[in-house]
Image 1 (cartoon, rainbow, N blue to C red):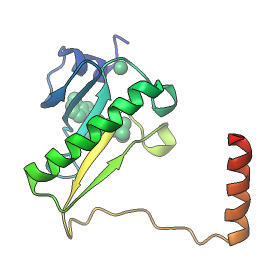
Image 2 (image 1 turned 45 degrees about the vertical axis):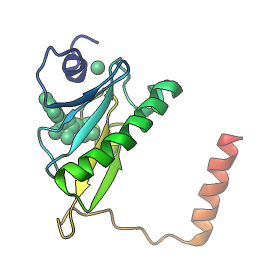
Image 3 (image 1 turned 30 degrees about the vertical axis):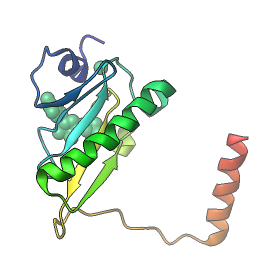
Length: 136
Ligand code: AMP
Ligand code: ZN
């Protein structure tokens, strides 16, 4: 997709702080990082989000994400790593070219996880049953 920022980054038309590339994926540092070393892993071909990614591309991204996460953890001496993917605007996706965030974490860095809802077991059980029925 020609007007897509991440397509332009993958092709080199827009500069980025590249950390890795192969035939399928391109990885670079986020310009507004949560912490130093925050990286994005993208497919070189345009796919909008998780649902649009071919299984083979997703598997390749997962393998490379694992390798890159270990290298980033070592490079910035992180205490932990979050792997995150935002899909659709309601989930915070602002760039509509699929990407996985690799976010280094440091003890006491103040980055907050979500607060868990206190739902009844009945409600949780019903949603598990509904998801299972959609999958079957
Ligand atoms: P998301 O909210 O998951 O769509 O995240 C998009 C991410 O892309 C954000 O963390 C941005 O900081 C990052 N971003 C946007 N433009 C660039 C750019 N030119 N180079 C590197 N990262 C970028
Ligand atoms: Zn794109």
